[in-house]
Image 1 (cartoon, rainbow, N blue to C red):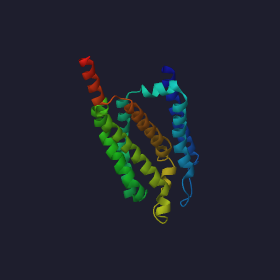
Image 2: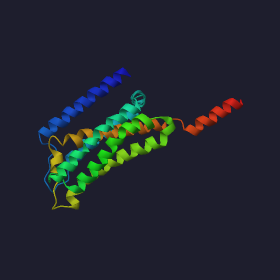
Image 3: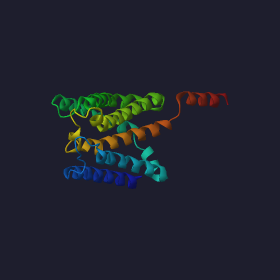
Image 4: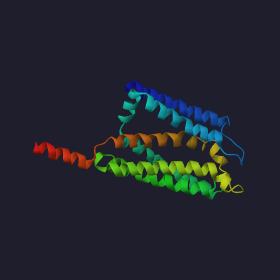
Length: 209
C-alpha cells in the first residue's frame, strides 16, 4: 500500500506541474468562438486513466478503497473558493451562465463538506453520504458542461476564455478531475458499507441461534 501511496502522490504532483506548464505555454487557449477541446481533453484524460487503472489493478483498487473517506470528503471544502467565479462574473471576466451555477454549486459543496465528513461518512448514513457525493459530481459536470457550451448558447456574450489561461486553467485541468475522482472513490467505498438494517438482521439471527 505504501508503494501506491507514494506513486499516487508522485503522479498527482507531476499532473499538477504538467497542467501549469501546459497552461503557461497556452496549449489550452482557443478562439472566442471555438469549443475548448484541449481543455476538455486535459480534464477527461486523468479520469479515464484512473478508471482504467482502478478496473485493471486489484492492488491499486485495494489501496484506493482503503483511503479514509472522511479525509477525501474534507478535501472538497476547498470548493468554497467558488465565490471567485461570482466575483469574476461581477467584473465581466466570466459569463453569468457559467459562473453562477459553478460558483454557487461549489460554495454549497464546499460549505457542507466538513459536516458530511464528520457526521455522514459512516455506514449508518450510507445513503445520504452517497447522495451528497453524487451532488458534488453533478456540480462539477454542470460547471464543465456550461463552460464548454457557454459560447454556443450565447455566442455574443462574455466568453469563458479566461478559464483556458493561468491561473484559472488549473481548475478544469487539475482541480475538477481530481475532485471528481475523490467523489467516485467515496461512492465506491460507501457502496461496500453494510446496510444498517442488514446488520440488525444479522445480530438478531445470531442471538436467535
